[in-house]
Length: 83
Image (tube, rainbow, N blue to C red):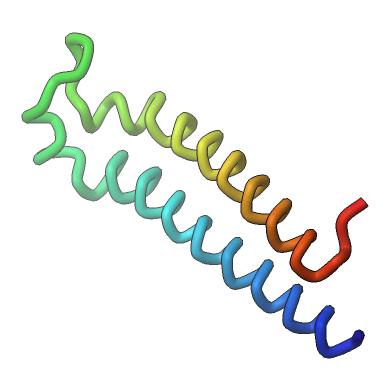
């Protein structure tokens, strides 16, 4: 049982780290680093780089929370730690 819990937490933390990397790339990369090339594209009348800095990173974060929820539901059932 202890080995299963260690594997469960290893998968949980590695997936969470993966999602945080995606969020960092979107929020920092699209909102700061790649802002000039993205500003050439317009979304709703606003430059895309500005949109990512103001709105896009938040939307991506909410989507990542939902993805994490679905993944954890599956992982909890697999390792029989669901409620």
